[in-house]
Amino acid sequence: MANIKNSTKKTKAQSMGMHTEALTGKTQQKFFNPDEAENFFYWGTHDVDFNKRTEIDVKDMDCNEANKKIDSLMSEGYGTIVIKNPQGKHSLGVGILNKLNLIFEGSLGYFGIGSIDGPIVRVNGRVGWSCAENMMAGKVVIEKNAGSCFGAAIRGGDLICKGSVGARTGIDQKGGSIIVGGDAGAFTGFMMQRGRIVILGNVGINLGDSMYDGTIYVGGKIGSFGSDAVKAPMTKNDMDWLKRKLKVAEIGSDFDVSKMTKVVAGKKLWNYDALEPTEKKGAI
Amino acid sequence: MAKKKNNKKQTKGQLGKKKETAREKMIGQTIGYRYDVNLLPDYKKLTPFLKKYIEHMGWDDLNWLEDVHMGYEENRPAVFDRNANGWVTIPKKIKLPDNQQDRDMIARELLVKFQMSPNHPLVDLKKAYRKF
Image (cartoon, rainbow over all chains, first blue to last red):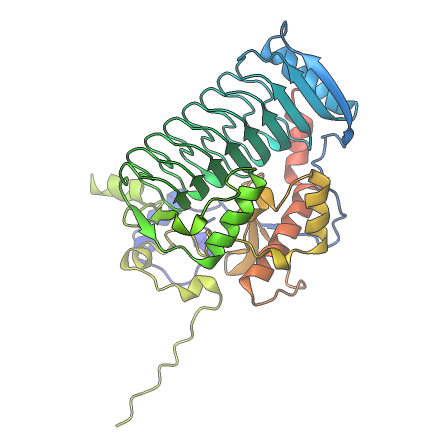
């Protein structure tokens, strides 16, 4: 965070007084304590056992009831939960901050498994819009196809779709890896800021439009590049990572990663800074 | 006549290595990341703690920690905690290696310990606001 108040040498903008209003007092300085104990789960979450397995039928439950049921099963120590008859319900399996094996026997509707932090999820069907939106950590495997905005604003973890995905996959991505076995629609990686997208098939128009950072790997044809998305050379490190990740994703074991196209940000659009609004105000 | 040697002191660390653009000089802040956010982890450098963590979570690799790197806050090594939305500064008594891959592994280990600690700043917020 920018704490420019303490710097000794004044910049032109500082002497113009542009920093005093917007940029002071934002630093939250926290020091790491080297004596912290080893602990593998967040405070208030449950230490579950993967070998303790149960099933629930959510046919007659709404998403709220189903999500609360999952939470209560985790509090009893169940580490493997099978959800029967999800029947395309929206917002199922959201907000799980635990380690867990979660298996959906069927398809999910919109915003499924959003904001998760840790679980390993398998969906034996399709998913609707914005699957795993804001995912923080864990692994999600979709056995069939996914709708638009797959992995929107994902922050971390591995999000895998063995089939094809819709438009705006990885929009606003801030970390993690999105791996698609089939094709992807238009505006894949739109405004992505960090992380990696791997598409083994073809991708639609405007790939990586306005991307700030991050990397996109494409195995098939590219419809067109978006604004400020450029090709980059593949390195050995890239290829090693791709081979390992495809193994984790359970797809493309015999895929020739050396022929993939690597796309990164051209960084021509980099002009973001906190002073811009103040300067504009001054200009008016 | 021999040219005078430029004794201008250079800023230490990654932050100073990058040549500032005219825009950065003018606004007094760095545009973009100060370290390579796209650096892929070297799995040969995994620490025993991280191996244990991966095994505990049932993952195949570093998962979300692939995106964690040792960065800088006010010219001191620090790791960004996305949960608290702030930098966690590394105390001076922890000695850090020069290699970025090794530093990143240490950053990952420290961050997991910090986030899972009952002393994490979000614990109080959770106690006060959690719904169920």
